[in-house]
Image (cartoon, rainbow, N blue to C red; front, side):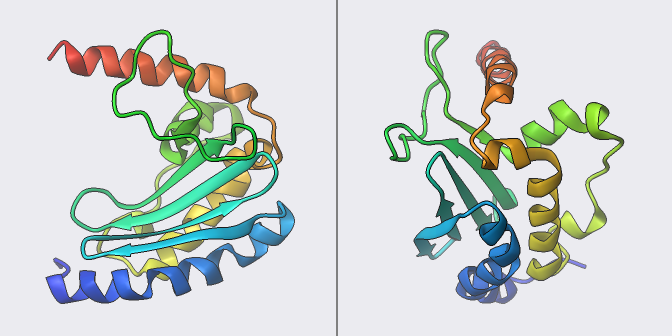
Length: 165
């Protein structure tokens, strides 16, 4: 069943409240505080931050549905998201999907749950996000960015492959 445009508008309008509710326990565990809420006509996001890490949980119904971005802070601030990726760049932001793809075999088999499909409620999708953040990125939320060097290799390789097409 396809979601109608009215459903997307309703989800965008309720996203911050729904995300805040879903993130409550994770925020407490990792001392994350809400620092930003953004709502536009075609997207919404909520950003949480502790002393080392920021997490942006967003909703873009047209492009990617619910997404999660893990961010290494620089001097306590969220660095700008790179529009273009150059080989010499140090990357400080990665999508949770990339973390999961990299770690799924080390931590155990993981299959993106049906609830993450855009046809399912935001509650179910955000519940899955918080579970995956804890399971696959707890170290990052605690300030251990060791996995970022491997993620940087993966993202830079993908960027080169995309440029060659």
